[in-house]
Length: 395
Image (cartoon, rainbow, N blue to C red):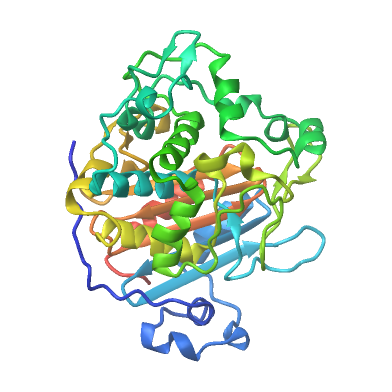
């Protein structure tokens, strides 16, 4: 199924910390007023619709929640909980979070830019660019295309189950600072047989680790360098970074927490993100994510042909009934009529992310949360997405 994305190159998107702070007033604000706000301009908010659903997300057991909804010239944030247990400090309005698999949209965007430049093709095989990387246990890189990597139809197993720091409290304590190379991660994945046949949708972080390796092979630069030059620098995303092997989060941020099923909450903020590499290592903020996904869907980062490829979807039943997935973007239906929105979720090292954007890029919603939450957390986040993206205007 193809979904055309509206190109709006002339859209001016307001930026800056002051804009986020002023948006915390009782109602939405205009872009022209953004620069007038400062830290003192953030009084308590009444519990409007956005605040109510943010509170509901917090009530599922998360530690801190920050949300932002946005339409041209207007943005509206809400928050609940604390940035760090035991301090009572609220989540910073401009706070940074690990965004997990929302990184995949950045990686896919760079890949499609390279396609548009004629430097590679979506139909190129993995073997062409990474000879011998995908083989053994029934894997054959000659049969797997770049498109299948980005679409999660490669049949390649997910490596994250092999990362101790992501799977147990003991593993986290012992290996949270361990550095992995992309080659090591792919080799770990190749020890397992394919979970599904080629062409069957099956989510795998290994796909995007391979995509990052291909970006380096094509350009001579790391995927992180290309993301920095082509997206972060181009859009002026000052709260977004590709941390490489650094285990810390720069600037104001919320702490991440996990219990690993033990009942004892562990602060897992410190984590070497090389374990997730091009599949999930980016650090960002609510405002930067909103600006990135808006720029992507309004055509400022990709030409029409490549944006059309990104938003061409296949069925992705693991993501829920009726869910579809393109190249680095999922597509979910909205309850208001026949509409839909593009989205990506992320979860890594105590942080949870979801970004939603309407196909015409006129409205975005971002949710960032810390802590495990419970079985109702994702439903509450989905409810926020549907509530806010169905609105004709931010209220």
